[in-house]
Image 1 (cartoon, one colour):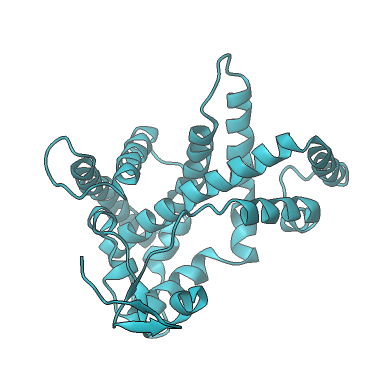
Image 2: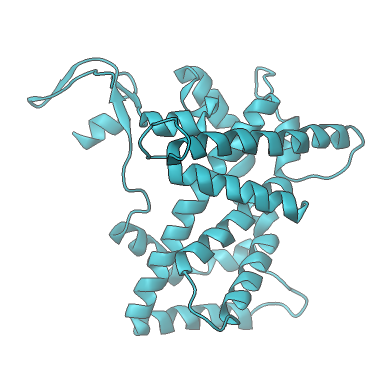
Length: 287
């Protein structure tokens, strides 16, 4: 039944709670037709998925992780580890998407995302003081923060300046010549951060927790990493794709951790018609 619900796009569609839809307001997720959504997804995937894309950003990812972990290790008080991991994944996503930018603005963007995330599954009461209302206001503030950045980048592209993921999205077009508008770019950023930074941080946390509970596995993982470091060329300062491919044992650890603890607590689907699956009725009910 689960396979049918997840794979039958004719009978089922994405069906997030009202609070999530209202807070995120991401047109590229649920306001497009099925074909438009596929087109949008193909365009995003072409710029964000693949070995070449990964290798492009490996050095900045490594620097952010190493510097952040060094900072955490130097703290003389207990830390909220999941929160710190979320900060790390947020820094990576923002750096990949728009490069180094005004830190004051980035902090404001991060605060807006935090408020939005809290409101995703809140009671949809749009009154002052309610979490849902704060999430709505954070979404509006986020759009105001990002829009000038997008407009500035469009001007810079005309002069051949910069080249990060935001620039690539601004210049991208699909096979039919369709190009994303500024609002689409903002939607993409919101979607990538909300979909990526929390689940990534949770996966890292569980992997590290399981490693600390199984020191013999941790030791073997460390040996693999030390071997990779030892075989680096003298002039090589950062990880490359070949190094990543050598991390077979670590890959098994991550996969097993994700098998044991899924980073997503639920997948939301909605029936487009009343459907009977092996005697179980699922009704097309609008709540």
